[in-house]
Structures are given as structure tokens and as C-alpha cells.
Image 1: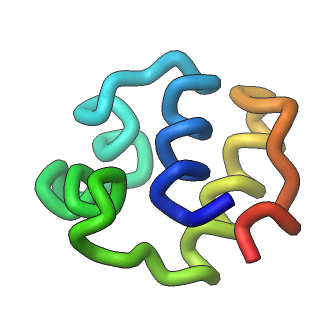
Image 2 (image 1 turned 180 degrees about the vertical axis):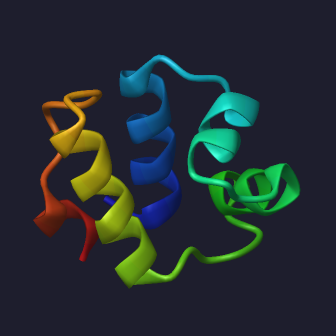
Length: 69
């Protein structure tokens, strides 16, 4: 699974809009939109941290950190 598919899956599983997801992680909305559309690539370490945070806070369940590699 590529990063743009994974980040979109994370957002949807957490039940957030793009704006809410960007605000949750304190990321500019434009940057998040570009990640999800594949216009910019999200750094791998950041994607892994996002997965970890969402899992710890029990907002997602079906995603593993290995998927973010």
C-alpha cells in the first residue's frame, strides 16, 4: 500500500475530514491535501508516527506500523 492510500485509509478509519485530520496532527491543510492526492510524498517516519499515535489513542485498529514502511 503506498503512502497516499494509507494516509487516506487512516483518516477515513479515524472518521475525520481532511481538515480535522490536519488539525489533529497540526499539519497545514494544504500539505495534507497534497499528501493524500500524491502531489507530495509524506516522510516515512512521519507516517509511522501518525499510525502509532492513532493506534495508541484507539482511533484506528486495522493498520500496522509495518504498512507505513
